[in-house]
Length: 254
Ligand code: MG
Image 1 (cartoon, rainbow, N blue to C red):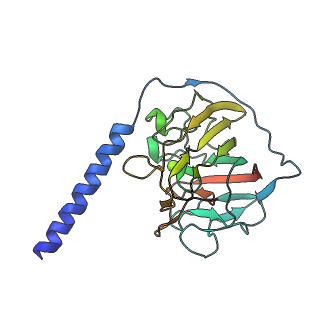
Image 2 (cartoon, rainbow, N blue to C red):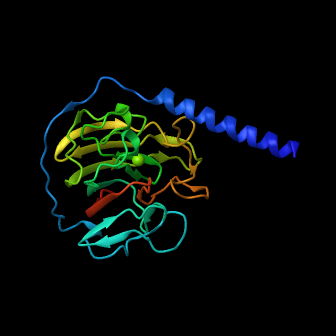
Image 3 (cartoon, protein in one colour):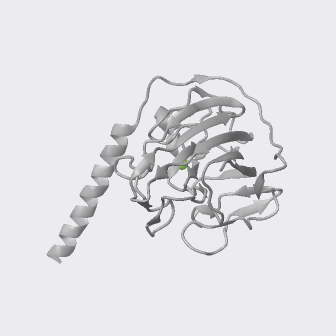
Protein backbone atom coordinates (compact mmCIF):
# COMPACT_ATOMS: atom_id res chain seq x y z
CA UNK A 1 0.00 0.00 0.00
CA UNK A 2 2.86 2.32 0.99
CA UNK A 3 4.53 1.53 -2.35
CA UNK A 4 1.29 2.30 -4.23
CA UNK A 5 0.91 5.63 -2.42
CA UNK A 6 4.51 6.60 -3.17
CA UNK A 7 4.05 5.62 -6.84
CA UNK A 8 0.93 7.79 -7.07
CA UNK A 9 2.81 10.64 -5.37
CA UNK A 10 5.64 10.22 -7.88
CA UNK A 11 3.21 10.29 -10.83
CA UNK A 12 1.58 13.40 -9.31
CA UNK A 13 4.94 15.11 -8.97
CA UNK A 14 5.93 14.20 -12.53
CA UNK A 15 2.64 15.59 -13.92
CA UNK A 16 3.08 18.77 -11.88
CA UNK A 17 6.72 19.13 -13.05
CA UNK A 18 5.61 18.64 -16.68
CA UNK A 19 2.87 21.27 -16.22
CA UNK A 20 5.45 23.71 -14.84
CA UNK A 21 7.75 23.03 -17.79
CA UNK A 22 4.87 23.63 -20.23
CA UNK A 23 3.95 26.88 -18.46
CA UNK A 24 7.54 28.09 -18.60
CA UNK A 25 7.54 27.50 -22.36
CA UNK A 26 4.33 29.48 -22.99
CA UNK A 27 4.99 32.91 -24.51
CA UNK A 28 2.37 35.69 -24.36
CA UNK A 29 3.99 38.63 -26.20
CA UNK A 30 4.38 40.12 -28.71
CA UNK A 31 0.91 39.20 -29.99
CA UNK A 32 0.95 38.55 -33.79
CA UNK A 33 -0.81 41.25 -35.85
CA UNK A 34 -4.28 40.26 -37.17
CA UNK A 35 -4.63 40.26 -40.98
CA UNK A 36 -6.78 38.61 -43.74
CA UNK A 37 -5.66 35.97 -46.29
CA UNK A 38 -6.79 33.88 -49.28
CA UNK A 39 -6.88 30.17 -50.18
CA UNK A 40 -6.10 27.95 -53.17
CA UNK A 41 -7.16 24.28 -52.90
CA UNK A 42 -6.29 22.53 -56.17
CA UNK A 43 -3.89 19.58 -56.07
CA UNK A 44 -0.99 19.65 -58.57
CA UNK A 45 -0.71 16.68 -60.97
CA UNK A 46 2.15 15.04 -59.05
CA UNK A 47 0.52 15.27 -55.61
CA UNK A 48 -0.28 12.28 -53.41
CA UNK A 49 -3.92 12.84 -52.47
CA UNK A 50 -4.35 11.90 -48.81
CA UNK A 51 -8.02 12.90 -48.55
CA UNK A 52 -10.28 13.95 -51.40
CA UNK A 53 -13.55 13.81 -49.50
CA UNK A 54 -14.44 10.19 -50.20
CA UNK A 55 -12.61 7.91 -47.76
CA UNK A 56 -9.79 7.58 -45.23
CA UNK A 57 -8.04 4.73 -47.04
CA UNK A 58 -4.71 6.60 -46.78
CA UNK A 59 -5.07 6.78 -42.97
CA UNK A 60 -5.17 4.53 -39.93
CA UNK A 61 -5.39 4.81 -36.16
CA UNK A 62 -2.24 6.44 -34.73
CA UNK A 63 -1.86 3.65 -32.20
CA UNK A 64 -2.81 0.51 -34.12
CA UNK A 65 -3.32 -1.02 -37.53
CA UNK A 66 -7.05 -0.34 -37.27
CA UNK A 67 -8.91 1.85 -39.73
CA UNK A 68 -9.16 5.57 -38.99
CA UNK A 69 -12.49 6.07 -37.22
CA UNK A 70 -13.15 9.78 -37.84
CA UNK A 71 -16.41 10.83 -39.47
CA UNK A 72 -16.76 11.59 -43.19
CA UNK A 73 -19.74 13.62 -44.30
CA UNK A 74 -20.27 15.87 -47.34
CA UNK A 75 -16.65 15.52 -48.47
CA UNK A 76 -15.26 16.56 -45.11
CA UNK A 77 -13.59 14.51 -42.37
CA UNK A 78 -14.21 15.50 -38.76
CA UNK A 79 -12.40 14.45 -35.62
CA UNK A 80 -14.51 11.83 -33.83
CA UNK A 81 -13.51 12.67 -30.29
CA UNK A 82 -12.40 9.72 -28.23
CA UNK A 83 -11.39 7.56 -31.19
CA UNK A 84 -7.86 8.92 -31.05
CA UNK A 85 -5.48 10.57 -33.45
CA UNK A 86 -4.95 9.25 -36.97
CA UNK A 87 -1.84 8.89 -39.12
CA UNK A 88 -1.03 8.29 -42.76
CA UNK A 89 -0.21 4.72 -43.78
CA UNK A 90 2.61 6.09 -45.91
CA UNK A 91 5.76 7.63 -44.41
CA UNK A 92 7.40 10.76 -45.78
CA UNK A 93 10.70 12.62 -45.55
CA UNK A 94 10.70 16.17 -47.02
CA UNK A 95 7.40 17.36 -48.42
CA UNK A 96 5.02 20.12 -49.43
CA UNK A 97 1.63 19.62 -47.79
CA UNK A 98 -1.69 21.31 -48.39
CA UNK A 99 -4.43 20.82 -45.82
CA UNK A 100 -7.66 22.69 -45.11
CA UNK A 101 -9.26 22.82 -41.70
CA UNK A 102 -12.20 24.37 -39.92
CA UNK A 103 -13.02 24.49 -36.21
CA UNK A 104 -16.72 24.07 -35.50
CA UNK A 105 -18.81 27.21 -36.08
CA UNK A 106 -20.26 26.85 -32.61
CA UNK A 107 -17.79 28.30 -30.15
CA UNK A 108 -17.18 25.84 -27.34
CA UNK A 109 -14.49 26.45 -24.74
CA UNK A 110 -11.73 29.02 -24.82
CA UNK A 111 -7.97 29.25 -25.22
CA UNK A 112 -6.44 25.85 -25.89
CA UNK A 113 -9.87 24.19 -25.51
CA UNK A 114 -11.39 25.94 -28.54
CA UNK A 115 -11.05 24.14 -31.87
CA UNK A 116 -7.78 22.47 -30.95
CA UNK A 117 -6.28 19.85 -33.24
CA UNK A 118 -2.85 19.61 -34.75
CA UNK A 119 -0.76 18.39 -37.64
CA UNK A 120 2.17 16.37 -36.40
CA UNK A 121 5.01 16.55 -38.91
CA UNK A 122 7.07 13.35 -38.69
CA UNK A 123 4.35 12.36 -36.17
CA UNK A 124 6.25 14.24 -33.41
CA UNK A 125 6.45 17.97 -34.26
CA UNK A 126 3.10 19.73 -33.78
CA UNK A 127 1.95 22.49 -36.10
CA UNK A 128 -0.93 23.81 -34.03
CA UNK A 129 -4.52 23.88 -35.30
CA UNK A 130 -6.65 26.14 -33.11
CA UNK A 131 -9.58 28.52 -33.42
CA UNK A 132 -7.50 31.69 -33.04
CA UNK A 133 -10.27 34.12 -34.00
CA UNK A 134 -10.48 36.49 -31.03
CA UNK A 135 -9.29 33.70 -28.76
CA UNK A 136 -6.30 34.82 -26.71
CA UNK A 137 -3.85 32.20 -25.52
CA UNK A 138 -0.07 31.94 -25.35
CA UNK A 139 1.18 33.01 -28.78
CA UNK A 140 3.39 29.99 -29.29
CA UNK A 141 0.25 27.87 -28.91
CA UNK A 142 -2.08 29.70 -31.31
CA UNK A 143 -2.91 28.66 -34.89
CA UNK A 144 0.18 28.77 -37.08
CA UNK A 145 2.61 28.02 -34.27
CA UNK A 146 5.07 25.20 -33.89
CA UNK A 147 3.58 24.31 -30.53
CA UNK A 148 5.55 25.81 -27.63
CA UNK A 149 8.42 26.66 -29.99
CA UNK A 150 7.57 29.32 -32.59
CA UNK A 151 4.70 31.84 -32.70
CA UNK A 152 3.29 32.73 -36.15
CA UNK A 153 4.49 35.98 -37.77
CA UNK A 154 0.88 37.24 -38.02
CA UNK A 155 -2.59 36.05 -37.01
CA UNK A 156 -4.41 35.28 -40.29
CA UNK A 157 -7.12 33.17 -38.64
CA UNK A 158 -10.69 33.26 -39.92
CA UNK A 159 -13.90 33.08 -37.95
CA UNK A 160 -14.78 29.61 -36.57
CA UNK A 161 -16.77 27.61 -39.12
CA UNK A 162 -14.89 29.14 -42.08
CA UNK A 163 -12.34 27.05 -43.99
CA UNK A 164 -8.66 27.81 -43.60
CA UNK A 165 -5.59 26.36 -45.26
CA UNK A 166 -2.04 25.48 -44.38
CA UNK A 167 0.58 25.09 -47.08
CA UNK A 168 3.57 23.55 -45.39
CA UNK A 169 7.11 22.98 -46.60
CA UNK A 170 8.81 20.51 -44.30
CA UNK A 171 12.44 19.48 -44.24
CA UNK A 172 12.83 16.34 -42.15
CA UNK A 173 15.69 15.94 -39.67
CA UNK A 174 18.69 13.91 -40.76
CA UNK A 175 20.44 11.30 -38.62
CA UNK A 176 23.82 9.65 -39.16
CA UNK A 177 24.04 5.86 -39.22
CA UNK A 178 25.35 6.11 -35.64
CA UNK A 179 22.01 7.62 -34.61
CA UNK A 180 23.46 11.12 -34.02
CA UNK A 181 21.46 14.07 -35.31
CA UNK A 182 23.07 15.59 -38.42
CA UNK A 183 20.57 18.36 -39.09
CA UNK A 184 17.38 19.63 -37.46
CA UNK A 185 13.95 19.75 -39.09
CA UNK A 186 12.80 23.04 -40.62
CA UNK A 187 9.33 24.21 -41.54
CA UNK A 188 7.79 27.00 -43.58
CA UNK A 189 4.04 27.54 -43.31
CA UNK A 190 1.54 29.66 -45.22
CA UNK A 191 -1.84 30.02 -43.50
CA UNK A 192 -4.59 31.18 -45.85
CA UNK A 193 -1.87 32.09 -48.36
CA UNK A 194 0.11 34.21 -45.92
CA UNK A 195 3.56 33.34 -44.60
CA UNK A 196 3.30 32.63 -40.87
CA UNK A 197 6.47 30.58 -40.27
CA UNK A 198 9.55 31.33 -42.35
CA UNK A 199 12.03 28.41 -42.41
CA UNK A 200 12.01 28.01 -38.65
CA UNK A 201 14.21 25.41 -37.02
CA UNK A 202 12.18 22.86 -35.10
CA UNK A 203 13.83 22.41 -31.72
CA UNK A 204 12.80 18.79 -31.22
CA UNK A 205 9.79 16.61 -30.48
CA UNK A 206 6.87 18.60 -29.04
CA UNK A 207 5.90 16.50 -26.07
CA UNK A 208 9.19 15.54 -24.51
CA UNK A 209 10.06 17.39 -21.25
CA UNK A 210 12.37 19.62 -23.28
CA UNK A 211 12.15 19.60 -27.10
CA UNK A 212 14.79 17.14 -28.21
CA UNK A 213 15.88 15.02 -31.14
CA UNK A 214 16.34 11.30 -30.86
CA UNK A 215 16.50 8.54 -33.43
CA UNK A 216 14.12 6.69 -31.06
CA UNK A 217 10.79 8.36 -30.31
CA UNK A 218 7.18 7.76 -29.38
CA UNK A 219 4.99 9.30 -32.11
CA UNK A 220 2.01 11.37 -30.98
CA UNK A 221 -0.99 9.19 -30.17
CA UNK A 222 1.10 6.03 -30.16
CA UNK A 223 2.06 4.11 -27.02
CA UNK A 224 5.06 2.33 -28.47
CA UNK A 225 8.53 3.74 -29.09
CA UNK A 226 10.06 3.23 -32.51
CA UNK A 227 12.94 4.18 -34.78
CA UNK A 228 12.42 7.77 -35.98
CA UNK A 229 15.54 8.30 -38.06
CA UNK A 230 13.85 7.80 -41.43
CA UNK A 231 10.62 8.79 -43.18
CA UNK A 232 7.65 9.08 -40.80
CA UNK A 233 3.87 9.30 -41.20
CA UNK A 234 1.85 12.47 -40.78
CA UNK A 235 -0.48 12.50 -37.76
CA UNK A 236 -3.67 14.49 -37.13
CA UNK A 237 -4.59 15.16 -33.52
CA UNK A 238 -7.74 14.23 -31.64
CA UNK A 239 -7.61 16.89 -28.91
CA UNK A 240 -11.23 16.42 -27.83
CA UNK A 241 -12.66 19.27 -29.90
CA UNK A 242 -14.65 19.35 -33.14
CA UNK A 243 -12.39 20.23 -36.06
CA UNK A 244 -12.93 19.25 -39.71
CA UNK A 245 -10.42 18.74 -42.54
CA UNK A 246 -10.63 18.55 -46.34
CA UNK A 247 -8.45 18.68 -49.48
CA UNK A 248 -5.33 17.06 -48.05
CA UNK A 249 -2.54 16.52 -50.54
CA UNK A 250 1.22 16.18 -50.39
CA UNK A 251 4.17 16.40 -52.78
CA UNK A 252 7.32 14.50 -51.81
CA UNK A 253 10.46 16.57 -52.17
CA UNK A 254 13.00 13.75 -52.01
MG1 MG B 1 -3.14 20.86 -30.87
